Length: 261
Image: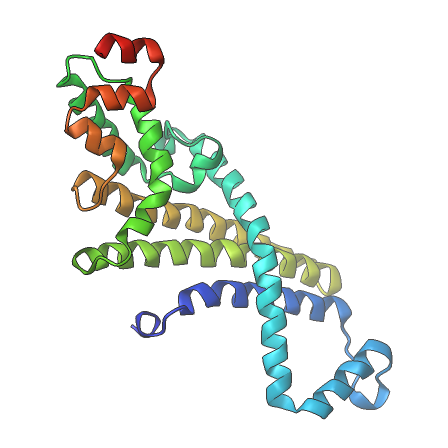
């Protein structure tokens, strides 16, 4: 409830959590930290800074540093998540015809993917085979999926759709952003203290897997909103209107356009 009342908290918590975890990694690697009486070099500079500006300002500066570190690690975490999604896609239960390249970011759950495929091929069959191939239309719809959240914004009648999507998206980002620094923390603890801390690496993998499925649920909200005609998807709209000439012009080769004309 609190997250719904505080705009932007969902977008702040992931980089902050990741950044603070990376700072914990640095703390472990630099330990033991000398106290103020025995500090030299960078340690002494930090103590002097804290003394000069006060505790509150020091915490604010630390939070800013943590946020910036979290933002920088976000892109790396997303690339790792893409590879985790690709590995999961090899499992028969989770195979998806659109899980290729950048499309990994917008892959829905297998159930929603099947619903979309069934609807597209049903509509194509009603045109007597005169529409572009179903696979081309599916590819076009999946590429257009990235614009659907933008179309949901500012429409009060479907605000709950965007809220549901945004919650799942934020959960996916939080887990994927924290997974990488958590793995780094496990390694640093294992190297600095005892090797059994390396078991925390499993926690990082669990978070990446959870992020994959949370992102799939978020994308499924978009797919289901398209299927329910609550938000427009241009390729699907043209197919439902049986505007074959425009469909073929956009999503097929020129020979077929001339044949339809």
